[in-house]
Image (spheres, one colour):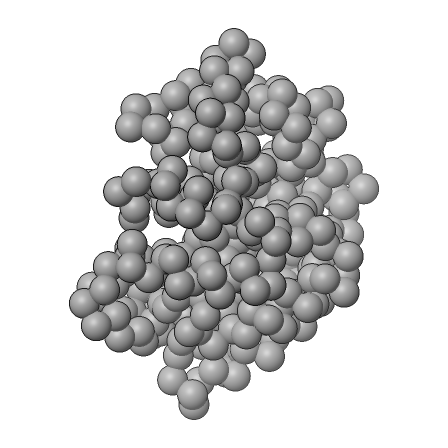
Length: 297
């Protein structure tokens, strides 16, 4: 298991991202590709990967910085409003060009209030997912759904998707904070869910939060306990990452954990972490050193 960096966190936090990566010996990065096939967070200007030649320019540019793409992230919705089939096809071609085996996907939509409507939403998503899996498989690429929105932050739904589609290239991008934060799971259930999903995980994100002791092992209303004001750096939050890393190691996971500490965006809002006037660029190095105790670079 090894440590990587999400592009957006670095570029929104650090004035000199390349020096930061070099200082900490981090050479793997997860990049976001938008529907127009542009990367907006690896340079001062967006770079295209729309063609093989464009993709090679990006690969060469990063090689000069001694960085390589280890993960690809798409902000998919699977709501019928975006041509995700073309997007996933083009990104799968680029993934194969870079050697990346799995693309992170998303589904973000508030769940309906009735079970019938929720089931209809899930069936609609499954139809689009199955088609996307076929497209990616033509390039030898898997798709990993992150536990990010209301639908995918429910372990029972992730289990259903695994049962139906793991044989067709469906995988998990396991976010170490989201089940606890935007999913509202009790803390003990986060570890149980990690044990359940670790064997199907192909990618992972790192973040954390801290809640009042009295509610940590309760199923929380996320509107009452919102993420922004309870977010913390990874090493200070309630989720014990040493425990999580051990769970993934025992499950045989050998992939990357991408640093995605969004507290760096919320330092002016969080009440769960006293930053004492420190900026994100002050906090990130300490967290990276903490993570390197458990993860290779």
